[in-house]
Length: 280
Image 1: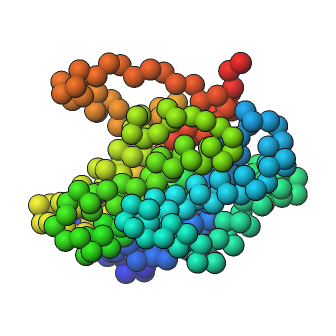
Image 2: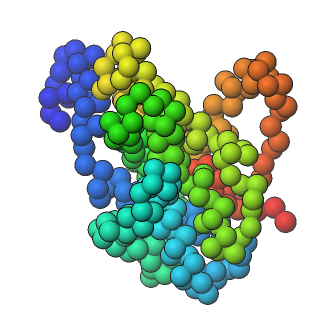
Image 3: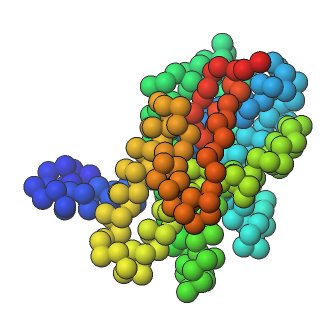
């Protein structure tokens, strides 16, 4: 790590930073950030089910939190014919997410919940989560690319579901908590998280195919930086989709797309931002 901080060549330093990000162990720091945000999202999304939903329905709260935390792996296993429950064999991850879930919902004085909701803490965790999301996309592309060489769309699918598996599991997860929201899926309404996963997957695939004449380290670093910038914008501004202004002119030409409807979050976290104001 000291090497890239002392490198006089900016390009070489960027390459070394990219390599560091590719190789750094995501456990436990990055996973902790991801699990905290996932458990926070479930708790916020359960407020309309009653003020004490997690006390009255701890099993539903726990299952939903685990599904949300590990959604990418679960959806990938389902799509590629592996046992969906294989992830449960990862005792370390299950115990880790369970401890975080408990502290987020039942900890003394709601301390962890209040700390994670603090804007500076939440922003740092969101940046760590974006690093983990890029790693999941990158590793999925590598693994599925070896298993299905030349199958472009299968490899792309693996990258997308690992970048935003929750978008395709949301209906099931909410149903466990007693919420039926058939319109909340990423096929009907494609979110930023899915679109960014598509673009990142395409970029990595183009680089691997030598269509992008830059190193994998620079490509990886660029994707991480862009993901962090967009997530920061989503967290500190009301903008739920930073890519939309860039996409709308093209969509209007290709599909005649109408202007998107304004959405009210209703006191729930949507696309990485917590909105405390709830309309009645």
